[in-house]
Length: 68
Image (cartoon, rainbow, N blue to C red; front, side):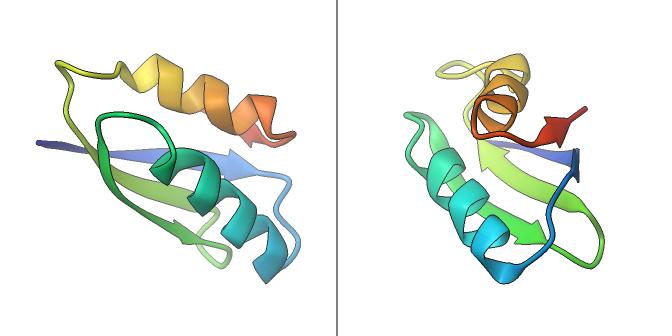
């Protein structure tokens, strides 16, 4: 497992946090996702053999948020 912190922009409420958490945990290879509205980031534990970090960023962007 590898842990990556992804900066997330555009979150304004706990609904956004729940949305992003659901998107990330729905990806095969993701073990857990902790999204913080206050910090503006997502801490994701994932298997780099199963999913690339760029795919995690793309999933957040596809959900309508900025990610880097």
